[in-house]
Length: 374
Image (tube, rainbow, N blue to C red; front, side, top):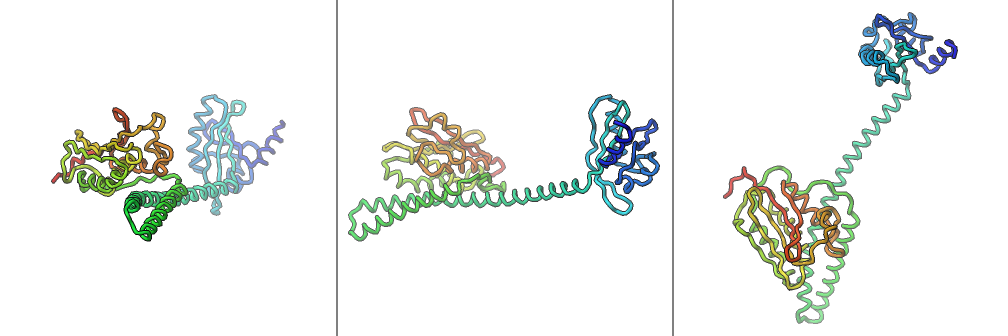
């Protein structure tokens, strides 16, 4: 291609082409593009950039990388990345420089990125702001979903007690009108259970927020008292299904213990495990709540004599919306809440097959060594 035609191409593309001189100056090759006449009129007129530092400190800094590339003899190019230069009148130009070697000559291309670049940058900034807004909204939605799941999940246990009491009444000798009211209440309770299931399924979306106390203050926990609260709450249900529930503290003393956690959430965790055992224990069997002392932990386990959990299910037991047996329990949130609550306290939870058949669901709470026992 003739030299004149090449210069015309460079001019049309609005590219300023410079060759690197031995003394460090930049010599303009071909015609000066329009932006160069506006931004650096002296360079456009003389065709020389004697002191790059005085004209553009950013470009002078980039020449360090450009020199390394030129001296290496490698092909390809090195880009400076976009930067902004301002004219004496205050107008801004978005520029980018590229260092290449053409026929062994160190060459520098300076391009005006134009208004399109500014629009793209503004669009990217707007996209980032929208993403932050979305993340904030998504976080708020997740918090409300967690609250919804917790509230509805906690409604299940008292509803079970109500249904148990109504079922016991229905087996008594009652006047016809009283029996009719009891059966009506039973039907209403079953409808309520269905509504709870429907709500849980409808809002079974991603739940990431952790659950439980998170301010780092642990007032101590009366493990015996909380265990008895849970056991007493479930005892009538066990009796109705001809089951026995046993409590074995195994050396863990009564009174306030120096473990992390709070009574409300501890009872919810233990209640989930006891309720899970109640659903899977065979008639006439025993469910055991056991405490064990460990050097830095207190271990709490709930053992049942049921059919156990198949190996392919065990790994997902404590994940969201997983169930150990089809059609048993709700939608698989109970064990998930156990895991994230215990994890929030710095503890661990898990499942172990019971020797002789059945399941052991357990969790361990770390002892708070800075807490003075009473």
